Length: 341
Image (tube, rainbow, N blue to C red; front, top):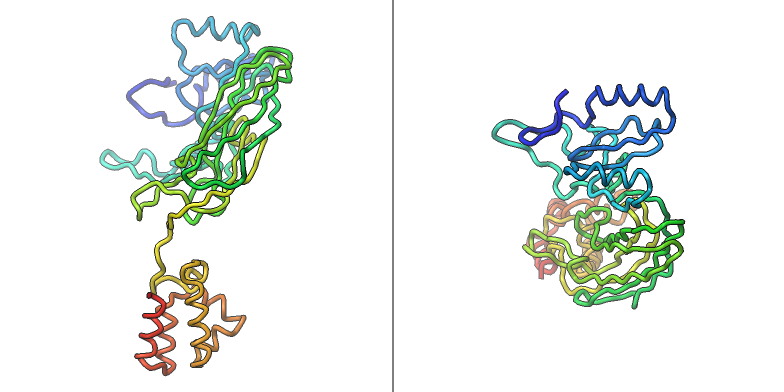
């Protein structure tokens, strides 16, 4: 079988069939089997349930054998974490179906949903999540403290968390901090890694880890503004050992003076206008005026059964209905002008 190498793309995520056959044969005659991987990227692991352990070695150098031996015999406690997701199948990867394209063009459809951002946001089950990694000890997260629960966008968000080594040997934990925008008006991933720290702990030892997040940790790129900006609203801090192993979760408020939404136009729906604090009062006043003027559209907006349909219609379409039902052109223009003022 072909092996991994520079210069060409892998056709699949499988290990060589000869290796899998050999592993099956070994597992048939021995129950205590540990697999050491040597690979450049994620691979599928159909043998996971058959073996006692899997050590990810990646692409090791000439001293790699000694390092692996120290891990296997317990002289060194492995403390690494995955920097990429291990999917269950190649079909569950975000680029499956349109990669590699042709000689002149490769279609990029992932957008912002790259790596764990895709699997986490879409709820796709994976073999091993981003940030995952076991060691010969265990860790407990507790005693989270944050200076306050509300910040202006240019303030530093500071917090601490205690990490305790609850196992019997020395170990190192990589504490990961993810941020989730719970009220975003933009399309964003479920959560994003914004900080991490590695802490060394003897058996039974506890250390307090401090984090400081700046404005950029809560910002997101808005193409219309051509800049990274922070929305006002509720955010969540999620702290844990991987993207799917969240131990501590807390909310905070970020106050910002930046408006990421486009100001509504006649092409936006009534619902969009009502959900924007800048225009909600204007639309409500317009509803009241239309009710006074009467007409089929006004009656429709007062009908609970038809209201959801009207909420999805652009303002311009509603005004068009009003004109069709006899509203004078001057009155219609006055309503539009008052909304856009």
